Length: 157
Figure 1 (cartoon, rainbow, N blue to C red):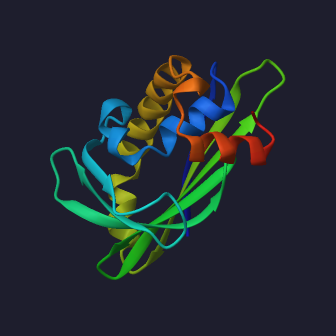
Figure 2 (tube, one colour; figure 1 turned 90 degrees about the horizontal axis):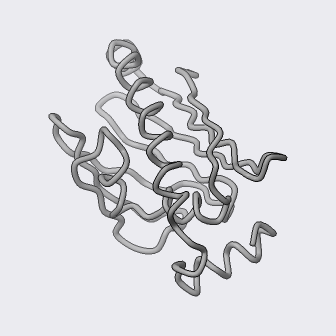
């Protein structure tokens, strides 16, 4: 079930936004809901990670789709369902990017997640703005060779 999506236009390059948004260990630096986050392998489909929400227990997630420089999807399994987060980066004519984070809920957990939706939406909105501030100060030169290659392959570099 589609829950909601948040979007923001950021004044940062697509490669920098991608680099920050997919650096799981750095999520707590700019994502207001994250206290700790890690990824147990490279940023690619099938790799799992763990994140602790501020004031809540931690939980696992799995990267299920990656289109380097453009889009990635993660799933968080929950009792009686899961939450799917779809992350999109689109260049805009003004030189920045439009980012979209879509939230879908599946299964019997949906009524409970609906109670948290307003706070989730606020946190995501704040986090996208902070993502833009961090990405604006992240130079492409600071990317790993792997990330630079992904940017070049995606046509964004």
